[in-house]
Amino acid sequence: MSGKQEKHLKITPETQQLIDGLLISDAYIRPWKKYTTARLCIGQTIRHKPWIKDIQTQLNKSNIKHLTGERMQIVHLPQDPIGVKKQFKRIDLGTLLYVELKEQHNRWYKNKTKIIPKDIELTPRMIANWYMGDGSLDIQKVGKLEQKYYRITLCTECFTLKEHQQLQLQLNERYNWKTYILKFGNTHRLRITRKKDVMDFLKITKQYKSKCFNYKWRALNDKDFMDDKRKINMCEICKKKFETQKFHHQQTVCSKECKNIKNKLTMREYRKKKRRKG
Image 1 (cartoon, rainbow, N blue to C red):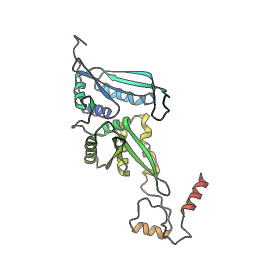
Image 2: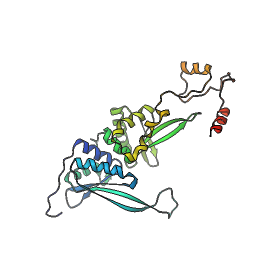
Image 3: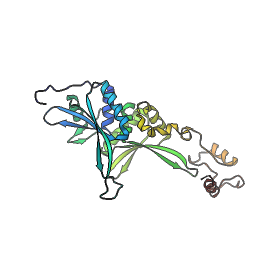
Image 4: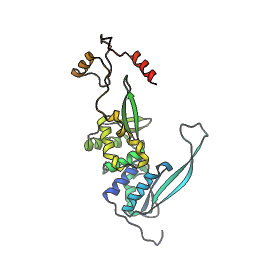
């Protein structure tokens, strides 16, 4: 790069949201030691190629030049026995060297460790890229009738507890989402479990999703989950009690104290009924 003019780029608000969303998840910035420039890099499995294509489109809009390439990688997965390695195809994207990306490196890294910038803004575009890179949607079946509950987990293991609290506070102030900080080994993760928060999260980020991540928004197509009415299987006496008193939110069958045995669905009967259907 000696004798060449250093490249500059204009970082728009949309580009900043994209960069922040990528860096909080799978991307990283590689500085060029001899110069005041750096490049943005991200790698994914080949099945996430549509997401890389979407990132390319957004970078092109900001006139950020970049290169992509596909290669084979051999890795050892944690769940596999010792000595067993698997081969898979991946795609990598890297921008050219820019002065402004070195500034982003100084903002996101301290002593070669990734940190959460104090001025970070958790916008829908930023959260969508964060979720695609390091988020998951899990199904949890609760109660006697195994009612579905979805929960969103944001994997942020490389950040400190204080930084998790910073993210948690902003999500609460901006969107009124109730998030939990989970202990995960020696690290932490963020989780959203409240139904209306999960629905709101998926709705405001849906417009930025890539087609290869449709499964992370599958809850929006689940009629049982989207329907606010719970499936109650009770006798008429217990239904009236359920409507007038504050019962546990997971209760969908008659209580143990119910004496209306004729219309009562016991757990034994429910299990038999379920086995017949299966």
